[in-house]
Length: 215
Image (cartoon, rainbow, N blue to C red; front, side, top):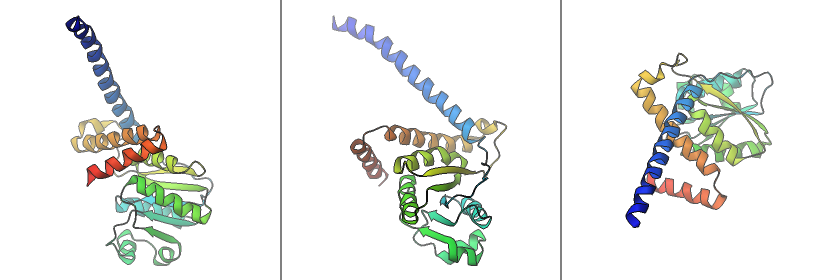
């Protein structure tokens, strides 16, 4: 009886497993096509503030251009390494010294995207900002939006993707390094998306577990 039950259940488990793998791979293709074809939004109206999530100087340079163009009152750079001096950051990004001094705030607390979201919301709330432009790489936009959406339901976030490599022709699939970067980010995005549906206590438990594993 037990062996018969095993034989009847095994095909079902196999089908479910194959289906889950298919959905995962299909989701990865959709995700990759989406992030590699993201467009820069038309900023008809200025936002209250601009937030850039660190991970490359090109992100900061893009955010500084937005600030200089008057698309936000202030710029918040989240996740700057503790050893990076303000003057050094201004120099390597080519930021205007006066603009950098008057209108740029730096966060050194955030260690990951979750921290970026938390610190950005603290900054925006302290200044009464309700509309933020979020600057980060195109492949990082979906996960950043999930984490920011979890951190606050009262603030409008406008994604502003930075594109370092033009992959609009769909040739990302033939570039091994690009596929690796996209796949790793996709896995992180799926994790963030899954965690966003968990109750708060379970979500915090999952986050603590991830931090322990990273250590």
